[in-house]
Amino acid sequence: GTPASMSRFRGALVAAVLGDCVGGEFEGAEEVPMETVLQHLNGLEDETKGNCVLEYSDDTAMTRCVVQSLLNRSGYDQQDLARRFAKEYSASPGRGYGSGVIQVLKKLASPQLVDVYQPARDQFNGRGSFGNGGAMRAAPFALAFPNLPDVKRFACLGAMLTHSCSLGYNGAVLQAMAVHLSLQGALCLPQQFISRLITEMEEVEGEEEALRDARILKEAEKPFCERLHRVRDLMDRNKVSIEEVISELGNGIAALHSVPTAIFCVLHCLQPRDYLPESYGGLERTIAYSLALGGDTDTIACMAGAIAGAHYGVEAVPQRWMRCCEGAEDADMNAARLHALYHQTSQGS
Ligand code: F2R
Ligand code: MG
Ligand code: MG
View 1 (tube, rainbow, N blue to C red):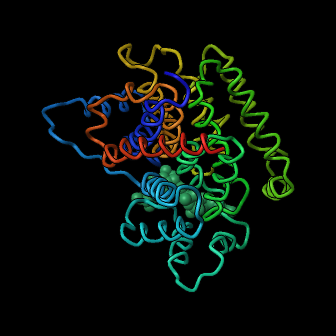
View 2 (view 1 turned 120 degrees about the vertical axis):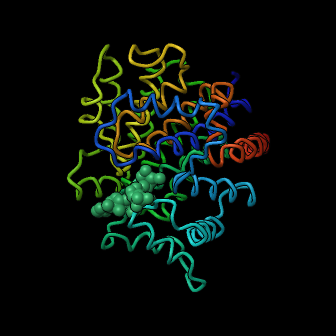
């Protein structure tokens, strides 16, 4: 499709919901044989099952807040977004939120709160969260703002409402950039795509706070850049086992152990793989592969889904999968509205 086409917007938002809903089945599982993944996905195709409903989790619940806020405020409004997060949590607390972020969401509900970023700063004895909760909801920033500096800035601020550690919010910046580039068609040249992400993250992780957090947490000097180099090395290899991907990139709840992994899933599944059905297109391959990694499957599949959906477009989304996933229809409608906002903003700038 053409860069930033409506189909790419719809693909990104719908496939993120699909990844979350189908990935929920395996979240936290240590080992997930591909056979089990394929059985789960085949079950969605079974017409005799009627309208199966896979519920979305916190990943989609918070993404929906971001989408609604961006649309209603025609851009980023920290007060509005914070209020929506708090309201959503209080209405549906059982969506599988991280155990730390719940404290932030409760504090954000207080009418006395002056600085909406403060509850996030207080997390983990003032160190802030490095979880992937900022990254899992970052895709809409790439769908609302046409310019990369805006995408980076607002994805960062939007994540900082709950994640004040740079290893948390920079994961969101990386995820939003990956969706932004994919929307432009950059995945047609995978080597250039990964190189561009590394170049951008070099600058992002050169910030004083990022360097300090990496030192405190005893990570590489620029942790996301280091992981992206590993992604590039794995991409260059003909064969790579699931175990190697997990040991090199991770499959955990930290943004550092899941955002580069999601990017790798998309890149790895650009070509057919002999352990995945021939009938699968790239989007189905990406989601199936993300699930087979185990660990934080709903979130890795949600993030990989957003990047892959922006590349393949909505036509690549299997209708039967979509029918089974709570919130997929809404995502489809909202994607069209974000498409309008994006093009309105690009004409105004
Ligand atoms: N939470 C889950 N899944 C597990 C439980 C599901 C649920 N109880 C159920 O059974 O239904 N999934 C969701 O959480 C992830 C996103 O989490 P988020 O929003 O980043 O939360 P939080 O609490 O800020 O961070 C997650 C955990 O990471 C560790 N952590 C983070 N920062 C830390 C720090 N500075 N020091 C030490 N540990 C830190 C903590 O263990 C946090 O609880 C997604 O997977 C989403 O799907
Ligand atoms: Mg979740
Ligand atoms: Mg998760």
